[in-house]
Each structure stands twice: as structure tokens, then as C-alpha cells.
Amino acid sequence: MQVPAPFDYRRATSVGDAIALLQDYGPDSRVIAGGHSLLPMMRLRLARPEVLIDINHLTELDYIRVDGSFLKIGAMVRHVTLQTSHLAAEYYPIFAEAEAQIADPLVRNRGTVGGSLCQADPAEDLSAVFSALKANVVIAHRSGTRKVPISEFHTGPYTTILEADEILTEVEVPLRSNTGSAYEKVERRVGDWAIAAVGAMVRIEEGLVSEAGIGLTAVRADHFRAKEAEDSLVGRPPSTEAIAEAASLAATHCDPFADQRGPEDYKRHLVEELTKRALSRAMNRSLPEVH
Amino acid sequence: MQVNMLVNGVEVSDDIEPRLLLVHFLRENLRLTGTHWGCDTSNCGTCTVWMDGTPVKSCTVLAAMASGSEIMTVEGLATDGELDPVQQGFIEMHGLQCGFCTPGMMLSARWLLDHNPDPNEEQIREAISGQICRCTGYENIVRAVKWAAAHSQKSDTREEVGA
Image (cartoon, rainbow over all chains, first blue to last red; front, side, top):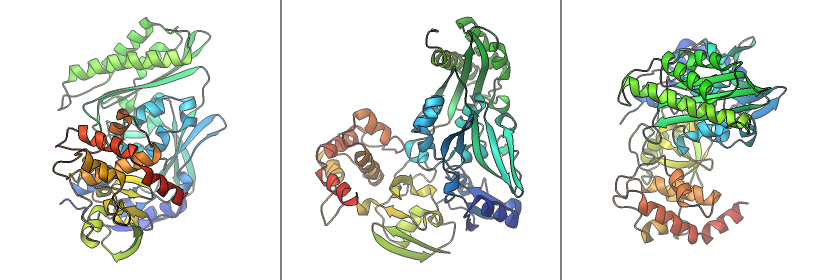
């Protein structure tokens, strides 16, 4: 029987309370939300916090809403809520597509958006989604909040810029006209991590790509992003040639390694193919007449 | 620490270690051994129970986190000695062989039918996709859930009562 090492448990009553508890208990305390990554890691002694601060009752962080020119998603939104959100799907169908492939329905009932990003697993899906959408994360601390682009949030596998007494409270995604998005993932079976997955966002104005986002996961792309591929698309008309070039750049600039999910060349092949598919579908969604 | 929860309609409280997982609280402290404990890694889903009306893997919830919640286990499916149609369906369609995955499967199936009374095969397979069965190849589980959907007058009654 795998049991976590002993710890103290505190239940936070508000964001301010959670931050105060983090300050009281210091770096050996950890926030727990859905717990579907942290608890297994604690049982394996890969994580050994002295204190768990439970934020599951912070309903103030459970919302999906449009506010000004942003879609705002609270950190305590569960995967199932984002998967089934009509509001999120109306602007970005990538959410429902990606969420339907994250873990399994039971895990999605508990796991949260904020927890997924903060866990910073190198094969995590929403990191690629928010990278493609060029989202910002909102971080609360003792004296206020700060906003950081998702491309600066992760600092490496399982690490983020969060200080010991900060918590992620929201992800905000700019609303864009004439924009399509899509997610493509290959996994060995339901509930496994991706072998490789690609999220794409394309905005087309006056016949040219004005903005492009390509997020990659599980293939060691810097900040889950295929920047060279994104840059190659901007200013060009959407075309199969532009897609092929971007896909090739994405496959070249990631850094997958061989493991039980496959060899490096297979993973690069997946990145190229999935980037083509995701970009193609995103473009079709932004401009229905382009095929 | 003290925890309190409503388990199958019964108020329970106990003094526990914070590291106690919900599955062990149910099985060992409450002796509700219908909830099975399997993989320990959030994969197999045999430990599935309802927490505040939602199916969750109880090996990946601390009992402390469940304090204040309403829990339903497989022991809560039958009412007044009468089996839930899902339970009857697993009997009728031979939806189990060794029975290890069965409690979790039935709780996911009940939740599905409460939210989608007439699911197709794909929807049934999606609903149980977080759970592993090594005996049936899932075929008879799908048949059992379909049988239950066709014989679910009882759950309609329950929803009316709850509404």
C-alpha cells in the first residue's frame, strides 16, 4: 500500500488565506487542488510536502467568463468544466478538443486548469493549448497580483516562476476575430500522456495570417512553443506550402528524446504531421472558404 | 484531525491522519469494503465513488479533502433491498467475471444513466474509459449498461424525489 509521508493539512478559505498559509508554512508547504498529480507523487515520495494547503473550496476561482477583450478562466475550473463550456468553445474549439483527450473522465472531474499548469509536467496538454493561444497567467501574492505571458511561466520540467508564497489564480486568453484553433494528439491509450501533441491558433485578416500560435507538448519544446514555425506563418497567405514549412520548422526545433513511447525520429514525424493537421483545421475554422 | 461526511446517507465522523486516502477511510475505518482498492496510481478506477454527486477515484482524494462532502459508494446503490437497475444489468448480462472492477464500473454507469438515460455504445465506453477490466473485454459491461438503460424506471423515481 502506497501512503504519503505524514503532513499537516490546512483548508484555505480564500485566496488571501491561501497566501497567508503559504507564508506561515514556507517552502515545504504545497497547494493542492485536484491532487491527481501531486497525491500520486507523494505516495511515490517524489514529493514530500510538510503541509498541504487545500484550495478546493475557493469557489471564487471557479469561473469561465468574458471580461473586456479576454476570455478568463479561473484556476479552480475543473477539466470537465472547460471541456463542456459552451462559452470557451464558442471562441476557441481547441479547449473542448484538448480536454476530451486529457487523462480520463474521472480524472477530469477533479483535475484543474491551474493545477495542470503549476504541476508543469513536460507532457501536459493545457500548457501547449495556452501557449498556442498566447495566454497570460495571473498570479496572486501578498500585496496584489502580477500578470505573466504563458511563455514565461514554465522554467523547466515541474518548475515555474511561482514563488513559494504565490498562487496562480487565472488564465486569460485574448479574444480574437477571424481566428481558428485546433488540437491534435497521439497517445498510446486513454489516460496516458501524449507521445506528442500540437495546438494551433491562426488569425487571418485580409487574406494573410496576422497571428499564429503553435504549442507543442511532450517533445521538449522551449516553453511548449514552436516559435520559429509561428514566425514563418505571419504575413503569408494561408496555404498548404506555408503549413508544410511551419510543420517542418516545428519538427526541427523541438528536442524529443527516445523513451518507451517511441524513438526520437518518430516523435519528430508526429510533430510535423500533427502540426500540419492542427494548422489546417485552425485555418479552416478561421476562414471557412480556405481549404 | 476530525473529518465528517455523509456516506450513503449516514452521517459519519472520525479522527484520522491527514494522509489517509478516502478509499482507505471507506474500507478500513467504515468497513465499507464494496469500494475496491486497486492500482494506487489513479489508473484503474475500481475505487470510484461519488463525491458530491460526481464520480471520483477515491485513491486520489484525501479523506481530509472529502470532509464535509456527500459520498456514495456501491453499498448505496440498492434501496430497500432492491438492486439498482445497473446492478441487475450486470447480473443479467454477465457484466463481470472476477468482479474486481465492478463497483467502480457500476457507479460510473449509474452516473452516466442519470445524465444520459439512453446512451449509445460510444458514450458508454467513454464513460467507463477511466476504468480497467481485465476479464470481460468490456463487451458485457456495455451490454449491462444498455440493459440498465432499458430498465431504469427506478432511477427516474429517484430523480423525481431528488428534484
